[in-house]
Every structure is written in structure tokens, then in C-alpha cells.
Length: 383
Image (cartoon, rainbow, N blue to C red; front, top):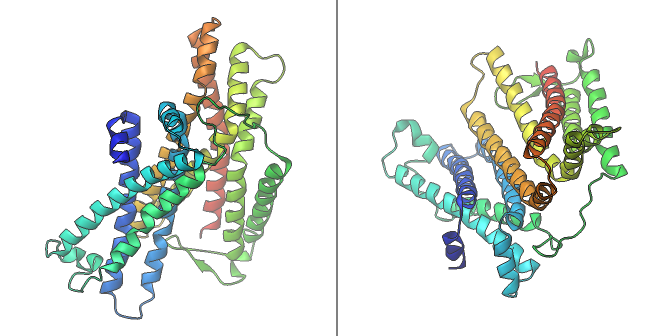
């Protein structure tokens, strides 16, 4: 009943977030049910069932990531809701549980709709092409789909609950927020990037193709070596972790010397937002680099494309883009007071728009560097 009352006060952004969460949960549930259907259709002892189930982990992780980012943005986007809950006696733990329950309810609704469609198609409605995917002709254990689909709202709820910490700044109780990056936060990604690049160069040296046993990659991506795969993973993780610090350095570069008001506003704003804006942009850039590298390989090797990885990649990209949009909305709401104060002081609106455009240009430059390096290293390791 509480969530129904919340839904009555939904705005367009709240409704869009809820529907996107439900849609993502429905797609992941479809992957899980497809894996179940294929497992029932395959002969006993086949090892492909575990492989198909493992293919469901990337989209499940993407949904959990989007749920975490969306849940963290709720207190900033709807301060009046948090204020009302606080006035009613709800503490931070209760608020976290309510936000997590809302996200889990959305994913659960999408999973239930997918289960209903799955049961309807199994009732001799689907054609022969989908018979193996649905496990038609084989009795369906009642506990199997319920157990699998429970993973979707459970993962989303836990991710959402963990994303809003106990010390989250509630409306009316702002607290200091760090803007810099510690020494270890910089040393770890730089070390990973250097080690990964070294391993990649070792794998690309002349005669390295004959060393060791090649690793067959999924999704029809050919083979690679252990050094190339390990080097790319290390370098990609290092570049992703460097996204936030690079955004902070780009903001400081804009404000270096004797900056104009436009450069000063853009630089200070980017420096303040780098910690919160870096992680979702890093995930989106990494996912996009992997997708572009895969598409490039499929184009160069006709007939190697696979439908399932393509659909999963679309879901991961959609969740990453939605997470970035949610984080941008959160940052925009948190800076609303600063923007209003600048307008009251007489700052021209064109300067504010120019600062946003300049920040966007610097962010795009940083992502082009990190994403381009990740894609180039991935393409070099495939053969």
C-alpha cells in the first residue's frame, strides 16, 4: 500500500525510472528462463546449461548497477519525500529499506510479466523454432522458474540498499563531500594500466602467437593468448578507474592560471563532480568500447556474429546509459542551489550554458581517450 501511494505522486522522471527498471528486469528474466528452457530440452549430462546460465550474469550485474545508481539519486531528486519520511519518524535505515523495496518491486514486476509470457508461450502457442528455448514437451518444475527469477529483484534490492549508505546526506542535513582522490586511488589504476600495457606488448611481440595454448573467446570472437587477455583486463580496469581522476585533472586544467569566469565555472564544476560522475561514465565507456570492438570483429569475420551476445550488449549499454542519466539528474539537482545563487548575483545565463558546454567537451575528450585506448587494446589482442 505504501508503494501504491508513492506511485500516485510519481512525476515523469520517476515513472520513467520505474519503467526502465521493470523493463531491464523483464529482459534479464527472459535470459534466465531461456537458459532454463534450454536446460530442460538438452539431454542429461550436457555441460551447456551452466554456460548459458553464466551468460546471464553480465546483464544481471548491469541491472544491479543501474538499480544502485537510480536508488542513490532518489533522495536528491525527491527531497520532499525524504523530508516527509523523516518527519514521520523514519531513520536512514528505514529510508534505505523503502528505496530498495521500491527498486526490487519494479524488477519483480518485470520478471513476473516475463514469466507469464513464458508460460503462455509454452501452452502450445510458440512455434517449433522456440520449442527448444521454452523446453516445450518437458514438465516444468514449479520451483525452478521461481528460484531463478527471485535473483532479479534480490540483486536489484541489495544493490539499491548498498548504494544509499547510512550517512547519506538527507534534505536539510547537508554534510561535507570530498572532491579529490587519495594517493592509493591514483596509484592502483596507474599500476594496473601499466601492467596491462606491458602484458599486451609481450603478447604482441613477434613469434608470440606460437607460445602457450590459445584461449577461445565466446560470442564468435576467435582466439587470443593468456597474456593478451590478462593484459587487456588489467589495462581496461585501470583506465576505467582512472576516469574519475582524469575528469578531476581536466577540471583543474580548465581553471589553471588566470581563468575567465566561463573557464572558472566549468573547471570548478567539473572538479566537484568528478568523483560522482566518473564511475557511471567509466562503465558506459568500457561497455561501449567492448561492443564496438566486437562489432568490428564481426564485420571483418562474416558469419561469426551471435544474436544472444548482441541482445545482452544492448541491455548492458542501456543500463549504463540510464545510470549516467540518473547520475546527471542527481548532480543537476544538487547544484540547483548554486545555480540559483549565481543567477541572483547577476551571472548571465549564457555563461552558465557555456560552462556546461565546456564541461561536456572536456568530459567527451577524456572518455574518447580512455575508451579509444580500451578499444584499441582489445582489437589488438584478437586474432
